[in-house]
Image (cartoon, rainbow, N blue to C red):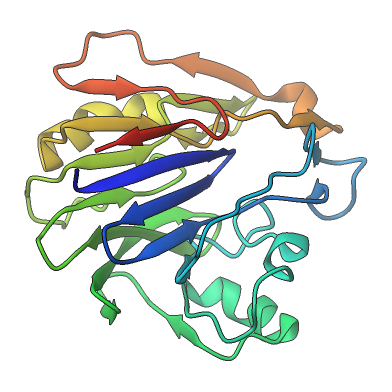
Amino acid sequence: MTFEATYLGSNGWFINFIKTNLIIDPWLKGDLIFPPGEWFFKGSLEEEISLDKKIDIILLTQGLPDHCHVPTLEMFRKDIPIICPKSAVETLEKIGFSSIKMLKPNEKTMQFDLSFEATAGAPVPQIENGYIVKDDQDNGFYIEPHGYLDENLNKQNLDAVITPTKNLELPLVGPFVKGADVIPKLINKFSPKYILSSTVGGDAKYSGFLNNFISVQDYKDELNCNLVDLKSMQSIMI
C-alpha cells in the first residue's frame, strides 16, 4: 500500500499515507450556498459526515465555497497546517487559522513527510490550484477538481489521479467542469495506475436557479487504466 483514499463526496477526499493524513476540500456539515444566495445555487447534505480520523494537514484547491467550506473548516483546530491558493487566504484568516501556506502554480512546499507542488488549475476566474502530492518514498497522486491540466508539467508516473470524469455544462457557457475532456491528457501525462472519479459524486442534493441549466456529459471511450467511482465514504488502497 502506498496510501488509502476515502471519498467524502463532492470535491472532498481523505488521504491516509503511512505517516501523514490529509483532508482535501472537505464539506462535512451545513449547506453549500453560492452567492448571491440559495435561490441561485444550494447544496444540502443528506446527513453530516463524521470522520473519526487524525488529520495532519488541510489541502484546499480553490477559494470557492464548494472547496473552502466555512462551516466545515470551523470544525478544525486553528493551528492545523493548511495549504491553499491565494483565493482562500482571506476566508481562512477570518476563521482564525494561524498556519496557512499559500501556494501559486509551480510553487512547492513540504509538510511533515509530504511534498506539495501546486499546478495551474481552473480559471474561475482567477487561476486556482491543482496539486501533485508525494511522500518521502515518491508515492503520490495528482488532484485538480475541474478537469484543467497544466500543460507545462513534466511527464511522470503517479500512482493515482483524482479528477472529475464527467463534463458539467451550461448553455452558452459550455463546460465549466471538463472531466470527460481531460482524461486522455491525464493518462498521457501521468500514466496512473488508478483514476479516482471526483467532483460529481456523493450524497448531496442540489437546487436553485443555476442547477436547472447544468447538464452532464460522460466519457465514453475505453480506458487503459483502472477507473474507480467510489460512493461517499468508500475507500480504496492504492
